[in-house]
Structure formats: C-alpha cells, structure tokens
Image (cartoon, rainbow, N blue to C red; front, side, top):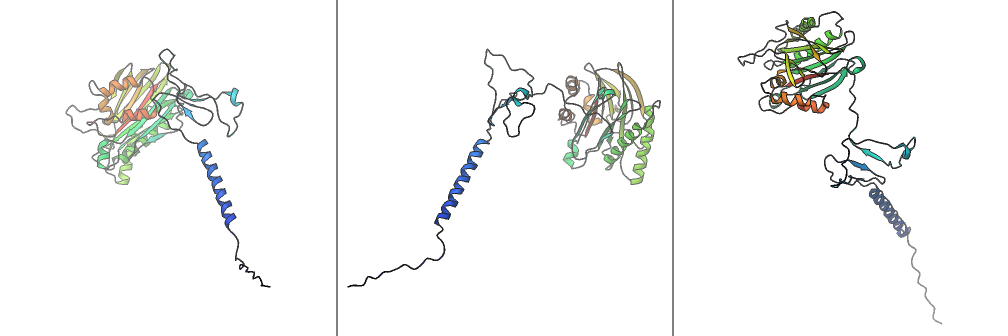
Length: 367
C-alpha cells in the first residue's frame, strides 16, 4: 500500500490586513459623502443683481433677486424694510432654525448721530479722516461733519499733511466750539504746530465761562503755540480760524475769529456768505500766521435755521469761494441735509488738478 504524503503549508507570520483596509476605505468614502452633502446644503449661490434691486433670504439658505415688475404691475416702494415677523419667529428664534420672512433694504430711519460729549481733535498726516456727530440741548440742535484730506501735492512728494481741526461742546455756555488750522508748507514742522494750535483752542474753549468774550481765547491759544515752538525748537507756523456756534430759538449766534487765510462761510437758501477771509489781491501765497501774529479779526453774526456754518483751510475754501464756483453750486444743492460721513469726506476730497493742497473742513448744520 502506497503511503500518501500530506504536504502542509508553513504557517503565515502576522495578521491578514485585507479586512482592515477595506473597512478604512469604506469609512473614508462615507466621510467624503457626508462632507459633499454638507457642502451641497451650505453652498453659496452667486448671482448678478441689478443695482437698486433687493435680495430676499428664503428658507433653505439660498437667495434670489425679486422678480422685476412687468409693464402693468406696480413698482416696488422706494423705501424697503428690515423686518422680523414675530408671528413666524415667536418671541425668540431658535439657533440653527432657518429664518423666514427676512428682507434687507434701505432703512426708513436716518443713521443716529453720536452726541458730542468730549473734545475731538483730527490730524491725519498720512491718511484721510472724517467725524460726524451732534450737539446741543437734547443732542440735536447742531449736526456736525468734519474731515481732513491729505493733498495730492503732499502725497506725490511723500510728505505728511499739515492741516488739523477740532470740535468741542461747552456745556456751561451751551455752545459748539470749532477750529481749523493750516500749517505753512514752507516750514517742515508746521503740521505739529497746527495740531497744537487746535488743541489749545479746544482746551481754552472747554473752560471758557459764561459771560466771557469768545474771541479772547485766541490770545492764550497763540501763547500755547509760541511756547510749543520755542520749547521744541520747531520750524513751523500755522493759520487758525475758530468759531463759537450758540443755538438760539431762531437759529444760532456765530462768532468767528481768525489769523491767516483759513476761512469761514455760511450757507443759507443756496447762497454762500463769507464770514472771514484774508485773500490777497496780488495772488501772492503769503498770509498772517501763528506764532508771529496773535491778534485775530473777529466777527459776530446771527444765522437762521437751516444754515450751514463752514470753517475750512484754504485748500478747500479757495475752491468754494471762487466766482461762479462749481463746488459752491454743487454743495449748495447737496448740503440741504447733512450727508453721510463717507460722502462728506468724498466731497471735501473732490478731484481737481489745480487745487492740490491739503483740505480740511468743519460743517455745522443749524437745526
């Protein structure tokens, strides 16, 4: 009988990784599918919408522009609304629950003006700056816009702007105090001098008591400038125009005092009226300045409701006061109401190849 030989395979070393790899690939596939489904749910749909059209957010996370009105349909109202219907949302909306009935559009209310509660000093050597606010009893008797714009000439030369401006509210006198300073470009430290001059006016204006003459604060402010220049051995000088605006039942009482060619105007019923300017008839770019001269030229006038009082450096005021000025006509139309702050900044920074100096303006609407 032939013996059967049984051949046995040698035992394998280690474990069989086939099932483990298969399970891992399955988990990766499931994770990729879940991620794809989430991205599909949360995808961002980008569509072109005509300027002025509204966008409605609907349940499901997508947005669609509203259908345009047909020839025989009624046009959409010019003022849309921001609305959260309480009937659908209840008192509180649950987190993660889609919000329905939410519409975005222009607000019916005008932006709230912050109340001026402390001194604001603006000096932007390398950038444009804008401020907006209001002051007066109840916080709404005067509306303020202030902006400084670095001139094209300084930007081209790589040098800092040299204008400064500031506003503050004197609670005791119930009046707004504003100042604009324009540093002389022929002296390198004039920007710092202008900044210090405005700071001095605001400091003196805040502590000016009732019954004191507002124009008298120019002399101590000039003294601050003189000591500042001497202490730091600066080569700098500045013009300065300052004003006190005191609301009255029929408008406001405006007092202006100034040294140099920074100017003051007021606008009413589309007409510009100069309050202060020191323009030379010979066209020379020479002006009185601090700290050399400390005696200002003062003027007091009453302006009616609806007026706009403007203090400005000559980079802005020169264009404003030209005969038949396009800027004057345009602003007379646009400044019937205080413009939005960014729009005011753009108006001060108008483009013109002739007016390339720094521009600073403080405009106050009398309510």
